[in-house]
Length: 440
Image (cartoon, rainbow, N blue to C red; front, top):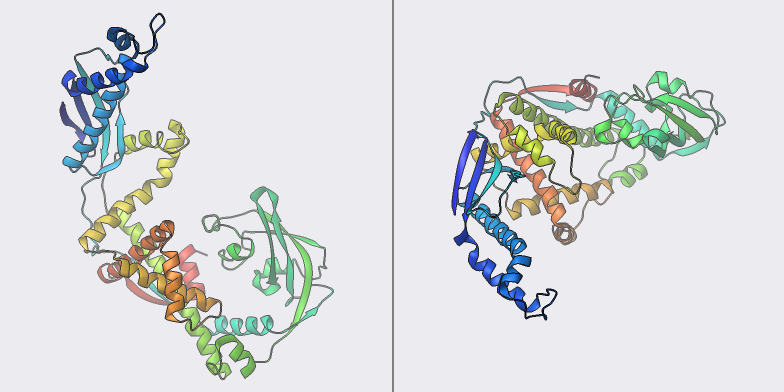
């Protein structure tokens, strides 16, 4: 067998394989001999059919099967021996006039190669690393929410400016149907004013555009997906099911202990300090996520390389349970190209920075995540034994291992980016951070 590579350009090649009779005749003969005791041809007893008739009836199909096995194995070994870094998998070139009776059988496979490129993590950029602070407005608002949450609800006949509403957001066309409790003050003022004076049973139609100061609240109250949040401009109905005012809870030691554990908070000043600490820890995660996305965008924009686009679009038509049309593959490629580019850049950054993920890294990250989740549900001091038991169960799931591994990689890369991209540091309030992130 002769195998060679023919380059079209830096990222597209064709593998040409020439198969001769010696490559498959032995296996074909063996299969024919195995077939003879089982062959059935009219006019002959089973097992008594002459060999030439067996070859005539079954030989072509057996030859094609055995040649395919030879070609598949040789192709796999050739890719490995040549250490080809492929995008997608080899695609056989179609040949409607292929002659299976030829002395030499030639097969051609298109391949797409991972491009060669370099990245410069220290290139000049205008990336900003935000330090988000909790201002007095945010802290005071959270104190009031705590007092309302743990206060005594007082039923009301009509909606007032400070009422809490229980009801259902709905929009059948967009699959929205979520029951929630929300304060009138949570809405932007223009939207909130539409509720004033309404009663139980009334339906208020509101627009999602500008419904809240932060569009991300659509995820909480309407259960809209993250990818659909920004720019969502539809009308939804809110059916009022209950209206309540609130007798605010007293800020005393009993409440503090209920919230944070005995003796950990002893005054309003302590409460505000705790709120500030918790909020800024959460904001730091959001700021890190924005920094990671901004660095990704910068690297994708500044790192130039060609992809085997035509090959990948053709390959996309052949993979998956549902075969795609050329038009569908074009759309899918456009949707996934940016992600593919960063996946390649990410791999290069990991190699360049000698980043490796160990099982101990994965266990430590999972343990930290579990402790954070347990704290959100009031379990602030779980034992190591409890946590490690959960870690073991989580890491026994391969899908979870894959998901968590991706998060560990992102966390390690973020530390590299912080160091080498040398972003400008800027301190902002949460409202300013939202405006900088989404232009709102």
